[in-house]
Amino acid sequence: MQAKKFFLLCLTVTLWNGVTLYKSYSGYEVLKIGPVTESVLSEFSDLQHDARFDFWSRPRLGRDNFVMVSSGNAPDLASALRSLQLDFSTYINDVGPLVTKEIEEHEFLKATKKRLPKAVTFERFTEFNEIQDYMDEVNAAYPNLTTIVDLETTFLGKNIRGLRLSNGPGKRLVIMDCALHAREWMAPPVCLKTITELLDNYESNKELLDSVDWLVIPIANPDGYVYSFSTDRFWRKNRKIDLSSPCFGVDPNRNFDFHWGGENVSDPCSLTYPGTGPFSEKESLAVGNQLLANSGNIAIYLAIHSYGELILFPWGYTTELPPNAPELRATGNEAAAAVFAHRGMEYTTGTSAGLLYLQFGAADDFAMGMANVPYSYTWELPGGGTGGFNPPASEIIPVVTETWDGIVSMVRRAAAN
Ligand code: 0X9
Ligand code: ZN
Image (tube, rainbow, N blue to C red; front, side, top):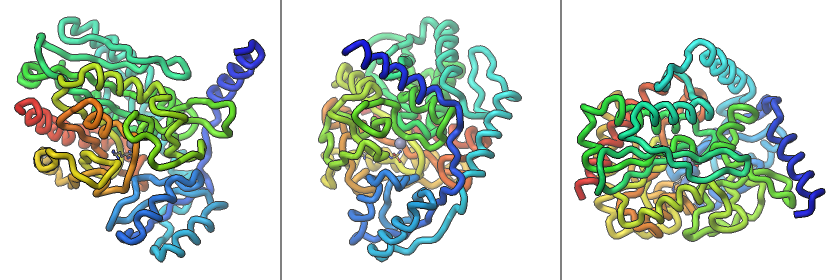
């Protein structure tokens, strides 16, 4: 690259990613749409690729759907919905104050609920640097059980870091990643809960480490995750810059090398932009390489996302079912029952294409389709707060507690088969 162009690139990266002004969502509203019927699901689903409309959860049949839009773009969304004959109403009038309140709460808790060495607090959301430090600390505290695995370096130079947990050789692997989507703040606590249960509660969970090794990746998309804390609460993608494009970021969960690009989203501003080619992004590559490197030796793959209370299994790219769909469904239902037993949180189990709509290049499909992983799931954790991405920090403990039981149920069944 020419020196001048390189300098400009560096300057742009620094300026845009160093911006500390928090994006105001004042004047943004959220519409409640639905329920969505089969006949318009496909057209409704296409609206999610329009960069002006932010689908807070994936378009879902027979359910209400929540879409954030600026007041300037609201009339266009309304007219698209009218032409699909979909009912809608204003669900949140102004997102601005909600975001301000959430960030203020986070800053307050950060000051009052300090993280202790070798521990994470589940009393508030944990930031990227804290999680990196935590992983170093547990690695030092449990050198015989843990290994740090630095998977890839992101566009902005951050480590995509995994922690491998093992109490002896010869076992198959569980791979779990969290926050491949930046704004899904409830996901990293689930990865961290997994680590704390396996290490700090070693004796009571020993059977899990006796039967499988674990690779846990608490923040699969560090650049996006950091940005969602520093600048834009609803940032979903990574922070890749393409100088020929007006927008930042690629959706890593559309960038896996399995039926990549099938949605035909070419607008780089879209929230589901799949990138310029399969595995063009370090975040998907980091996970994809681990899946391939351990192919044939992986008991289960778990992608932790939010929100929607869903246990999803392949496929997402077709409505056809994988041969082991009955077993995948039964395992999902069993996990959902384990979660339900806590406080009645109700999950639905099903295929991505069946419960949502067709999506291409996602991690769970890649795991099963390319790495032959027999059990592959995406968890959509519970939503909360007024919208779905801003559950109060007080929800973290109930969510991670119930989710852990669901994960244990799944892993036990996968490990036994
Ligand atoms: O759309 C996604 O990537 C996931 N939903 S989210 O709201 N967290 O963005 C769902 C992915 C499910 N898996 C497949 N479609 N294969
Ligand atoms: Zn997600």
